[in-house]
Image 1 (cartoon, rainbow, N blue to C red):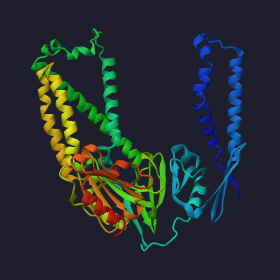
Image 2 (image 1 turned 120 degrees about the vertical axis):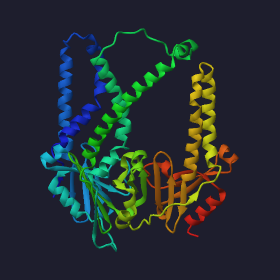
Image 3 (image 1 turned 180 degrees about the vertical axis):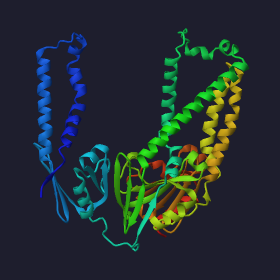
Image 4 (image 1 turned 30 degrees about the vertical axis):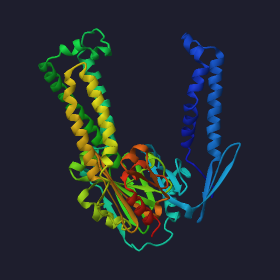
Length: 476
């Protein structure tokens, strides 16, 4: 039976047409808008009416021409007004299913269904807006399990509210929202307590000795105390907002594995359901964010075939205690045997990055001391940078097992990657002239559609290590 998308898609098509036409229309009517008389010529209103009617008719007609039909084996999609495109997707080629429901979709009883194959990149191979009943029927009709797994039982895992709250302390919402909160509080304070206008001071005044000579130690302490209090308030406000956003997004995170399919359900206002074939999982990435790591929490992500870019990151578990990682992942994904990497980098690895950074800081401090000796207070920063580079060097480890390449990259945020050997498309070794001085190489693992290529790149490998990894990759 031939079916069409829900009629609400007409509104989205109309919105899409108008959104991409605002700039051309504004440029076309620029002279009339700039006049500012409020009384436009009749042809302007006539053109706007014609454009609105044509856009509306086009949206309705394109919706009417976009149909889909599926049977027990194949999904047929037809779309296009003048140029008609017909697509046929075997149900056995569909690897991942994503079902999303916003609050409006739940109110209307519909859902947005995305079907991904192994060749999917930025866009879904098929996107359907249909009734919730039809979405569930699609979910049951598409056979994701080609071969029965040796795991007959259904395995479940739930993420608690406390774990989600700990995630909010290190999320991007917190760190990216902090500058916004600072700006909002600053403008709110200036609106509530307006200060008299002061004479504008040039930025070049900071590089004059007379400016620094007028600043006393008491002034510096007072400003520092005010600054600490202000930043403390901003941090608390941003954290509370981040907690709300995390609960809003990850509420009810429920993870199940039945056979060779992993299903993820989560969301409050916008509910989301994802199904992924286990055989399409290339790697597991355990991310220990800076603040969450202090309290013993981590996040688990996956890189799957057919997903490209950071927006396509598959989050397996948003937050979990580090002490429970081995037990939980051992039940959900026994294909990945989690071990702790033990092999360190070459001893010269830290110098390849530390020397250029420290040299730049020394030059900056030397120039600053010409204007004021207060720049000498930055000298401890050199020691801090060196100790951080040493920490990264000592705690970055790697290891190879029977079918896994393990890499733990240390830093403020620590990431441990477990990559399957059969998922590696190629291995690259690079050596710049600077690295050649220290006799180290840069290793990069190439996989299909990585979320972040830097997590599969490591600098500080010796020639002996490179040869050993190549032999392992060739299964020798």
